[in-house]
Image (cartoon, rainbow, N blue to C red; front, side):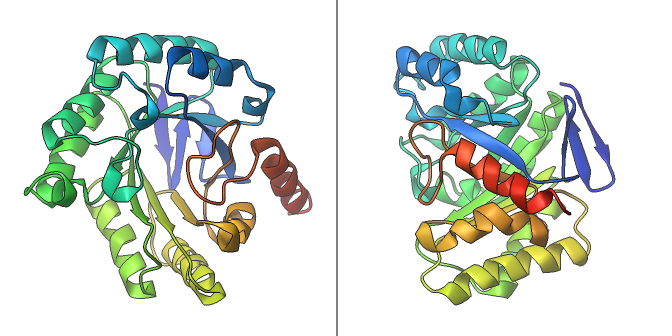
Length: 266
């Protein structure tokens, strides 16, 4: 896969994640091939700098041949735009159940296909899917790197917003485990929770992060983090072309307009 690291910036194909304005990622959430094809041809995909395939939405995700077939279609459609491959587990808000072995095999096969540019790996997958804990993440990270695929290590908390020190601990642990991009999403219950998330982002950026960060507060209360998170250090924000893949995602075109307005004088 075509990628290189330049300091705390990861360049994937020609997209510099961690430099300049936040990049916009649009998820594909179709359940069938027909729905995914419609998403790929929809105008709402045009603002995307990179695209995420949320494979947990796909009805045939348990069939390796079907997954490979869809990856080929998606890759051909995207041209030079990077593709992030994600199976979000049910423990972190995903759409389908999966075993630890199937999760590991799915990510490893996707990486070996040569059709993806990035793979999402949940920090706590070793706890929620197996009893291996961090050893599971470390092994899978190593396997994805061997295949030439950078890892977006992620943590999603739909119950609330952890304390500042816990957010920082998770981000540092992702970095220590070899992640290439560090991602955290939280559910804010108060405005102060959004500030906690943004503070963690800023402190990690200024306190020794050697990797790009992706952080967001979800739902309506957290929209400001999706639009202005880049000022605090978040390198990617997510907008929807069809169905939102998380609470608070706005339409990608509107998001692109707002981000561009904020950054045109920066």
